[in-house]
Image (cartoon, rainbow, N blue to C red; front, side, top):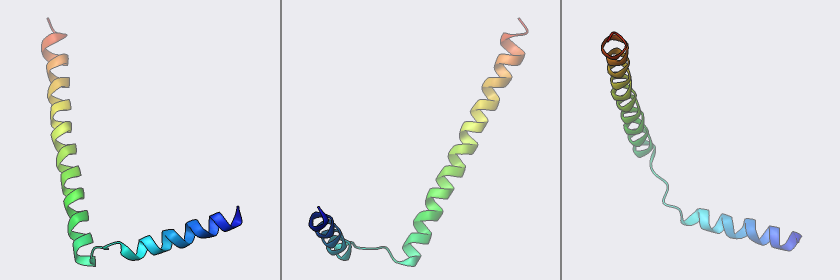
Length: 63
């Protein structure tokens, strides 16, 4: 069992050498895009939540 575990970690290390890691600039740019899209979606969903809450409270429940 120890030999199989050692082989697994050895092969995993070899595979990690083949990974094309992003540069720091690419990582920062892509992270900024993800954060921007997340904030945009939060604002979009928050606006719809506010709109639907307003409609339910003032139009549907007032009838």
